Structures are given as structure tokens and as C-alpha cells.
Image (cartoon, rainbow, N blue to C red):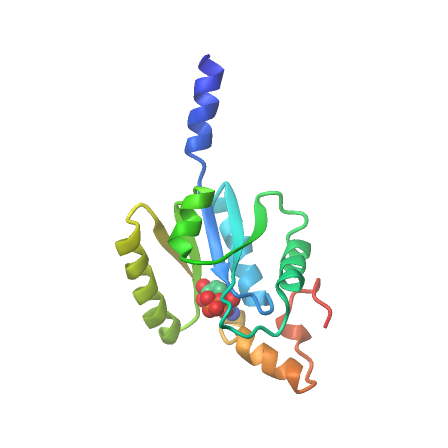
Length: 164
Ligand code: ADP
């Protein structure tokens, strides 16, 4: 009984974070944030948000496979996909934390609005921010896609698990 109770409590108290994004494709900026967050949470779910009105360069399964390959040796990192509101997805997977990376002032403005709106929707969920490592501050998926589209070499911005 005692064991059952304590394991139940331990389960309840697990710190689960989601790291939402498009990951089209996942870059060294994303992997750096996830790796730095591993010691902070019991589980991190890299959650690929899908929006039917958005055009992606890489299909969902491909994006998911790449992320899984990057974290194949990290048992606390999982990959999933979701549609709809991020806070609803958090509730579904019992995550109390939304992890986000901050590169610059533009990110700051955007993220502040989203985080405050999300708190209005569900005040049990905290958004946790991490500043980007200096080396990765200029990496974003949009420019990486442009480089790929125009035949440039984007490998220096991508995890070694990705071969395009
Ligand atoms: P979104 O479509 O929500 O912007 P992204 O896949 O571009 O999704 O990004 C997901 C998260 O990763 C966001 O919190 C974003 O700020 C963060 N991120 C993106 N690029 C970097 C980077 N180079 N360094 C750190 N964080 C990053």
C-alpha cells in the first residue's frame, strides 16, 4: 500500500515539459536547448505542432524520424505530434511546463505574447525560457530551408543525424 501510494505520488509529481515547434527541420539551435533542458525535467516531449493551413518543407514523419534519431540515446526525450491548442496538448500528456528557446528581441516579443495568452488559458502551466547558446543564435529553420531550397550546404546548422 505504502509503495503503491508513494509511486502514485511520484508519478503525479513528475516534471514533464513539452518543447513545441515545427522543426522543419530540427536544427542545432533546437537540439542545444533540448540537451540543456534534459537535467531539468523528468521527461521532455518534443511536440511537433501541425497546422493544416501551413506548408511544410519536410513531411511530418520525416521531421519526427530526424528528432528521434537525434535523441535515440536519451531515454527521457520523446517525440510526438499534436494539433490544436498547445495548452490542451499539455493537459493531455500531463505536462506542466512549456519549454521555449529565446534567440533575440524578436523572439522575446513574440514569446511573451504567447506565454501570457497560454497562462490565461491555463494558469497551471508555466512557460520556461532558455537563452540560445551564442553560436546558435542566428540559426532559424526558415533560413535553413532557404539554403536547402537553393542548393546550399546547410549541414553546419543541422545535427549530424540529418542528411539532406
Ligand atoms: P515555431 O514554428 O514555433 O517557431 P520552431 O520549430 O521554429 O517553431 O521553434 C521551436 C522552438 O525552438 C521555439 O521556442 C524557438 O524559439 C526555438 N528555437 C528555434 N531556433 C532556435 C535556435 N537557433 N536556438 C534556440 N532556440 C531556437
